[in-house]
Length: 530
Image (tube, rainbow, N blue to C red; front, side, top):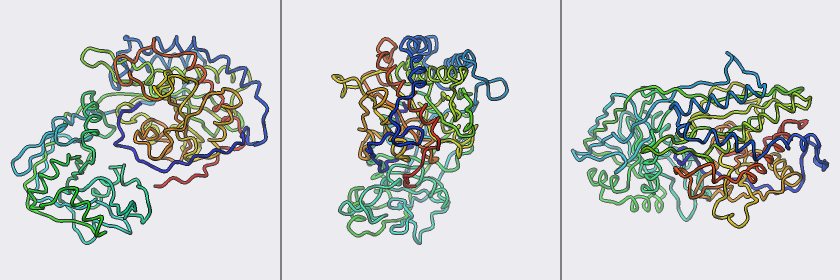
């Protein structure tokens, strides 16, 4: 699972606890499906262990995106799909190929009035461009960098060709958000892309964002920088640099601008007055963010089981097969993250294809998809939703499996659980299906802890299902929680609880079986804030 939340937002999450079971669109149906029970028996701990012992072995070199180990894993998954009799989609291949580009952000230097500030010490960034230095003799401090009906920092301000410095988050007064007049945050608080997109549209030359918890964010970014962060964007296609500043660096800049206030004082002033705070001052700025330009090749692996009478509708079952690769000579095998999800998809593909061969195939088509680039920023799933093989409008759901082989500290004494994340975010019907399948077939404890909108981990936004959810497609993210070996070289096969993993994969199977065979497609009845 991705160890970064910069791309993601916090949204209110609907908790639906309706007791009705929903099978094949008949709410009163309580009878077990004997065919589903029959085919679920082909999902076994032994098979899961067999595949994982290969995928998460040192031979696969940690499956880092763009590296030989990742290609070796892709070939293995494709070979399994072929052995099951799953046909290729086109060109005789199971791959959706895409290119990624390294981002070497640690080399960036920002100079303010001849004083140098360094990346991963004073600031950080995620994206760069090739052979580019930006210079300016002015900085415009622009409050929170928001342009909304109730609150606008851009009103009567010309930002074209200027370097902007803004505060992260949103302005509040007595817990009321000044942008909405209501309690709670909006996407503007947690999705920096929205503010940077706005600044770019207004014609800004560069954007400096003051980060509230710089040390916490820096720990995440430093980890990524040490493990070759990647981007789907070609370096020359990134038109405006964005940098995230520590409060210390930001207050140095304020001092250079002759603004004798701390970041806290400025926030308090905006909060009390309800008005914006902006000022432009003469400050010599030089941003050197030149990056090496090279291309790495990657691919998603697709196994398509065509449906019958509802074959034009699609269910996606996903997991990411990449991990962190080799670091300082140590192989990060990622047995749980996300070898466990990868082999779950393999096992599910085999089971559904067997059912199809024996005349019990799904009514809707199912795409079994293992994606690359998750650890680099959900790149593979992002590429798929930007270049879908099947129309997103025909995609009814994504069931995403990311870490299902271990037990977290919270459940050390009660291991019969799985975290279910996002099931009611877009479709209350999907939530009922999920609950019903568990009650009828599995008996796991479905833990909704991370559906809490105040959860600081933001897990809903940190795995590949999120790229489907952003496109209004209902999702479930199956997750065992983090553990002491998360993103460490000690995440090894021998620590996996395969019996428990089998039970969790069967829950995904029954849920997929039900969704694939319902008379009507899942209803999207919950509106997410945009």
